[in-house]
Length: 101
Figure 1 (tube, rainbow, N blue to C red):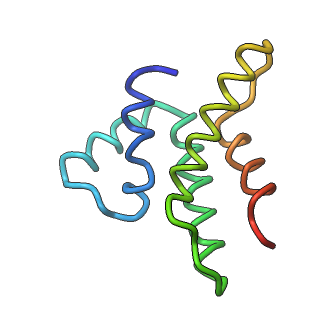
Figure 2 (figure 1 turned 90 degrees about the vertical axis):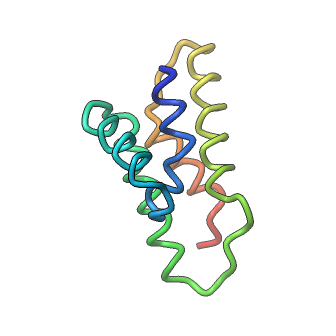
């Protein structure tokens, strides 16, 4: 993972929830224009947020952070095993395992 992807990835939850400063938001948006993997992550996280909004259950504290960490772990494991799995696929698989519906 490129350093810029990691830096931007650390802010994706705040990006989709509109909690970044104007400068941070511009930086993330510039990166998303050139990075399909991070763009896929935003799509997956936005989908997750929208699914969760429509249900009456509390979102566990730090859920988005755990999803991102799980994604990084699975990517590292895939690299070690010589396989490839996009960030979007890793997040989708995590959601399938952990969502209550």
